[in-house]
Image (tube, rainbow over all chains, first blue to last red; front, side, top):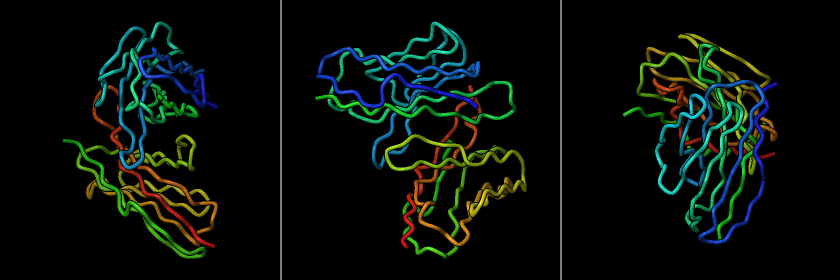
Length: 114
Length: 111
């Protein structure tokens, strides 16, 4: 079974703090994604990576950065957290070699910025 | 612009009834994905439809794909309370392995 894990299920941070969200997958997937999910706004792609050290902006990259130093790990960084970044953050991974783009999701991190 | 539209966005139904969720998309993709999300939880893959005419079934859920009409349906047969969830469809984004997501259909099944 594909397993995608995220470092925290719940996180509370203060405005201005630097926040790291970690995602690890154990299936040797090439592609990894960070989404945020807010009520009424569906899933929005923040960043994705299709290889180690490669990254591409998604639809809402402002206020975020990412790091992918190892194939299995994809980190989302909030350089200076703000209250409008309070959200559910979902990490996903997918393989480049299966002939389809099916994504496997981690359990999510619910981040509250106060 | 690539778009995926689901309808309805909200559906409240009685146990035992049948209903269908629709997913229309604007790309020429022939691959479509259905996911389920329980409240407060993450997304779980339900079906992967890889070609025109594909049909897949799991319990009371059946998904089908018509790539010519750019339409997928998720049919619920004799609904039970446990199927209450939000259902998302997604299609291939055409580049870099992205998926384009529908807004989700929140399904509530009342006893």
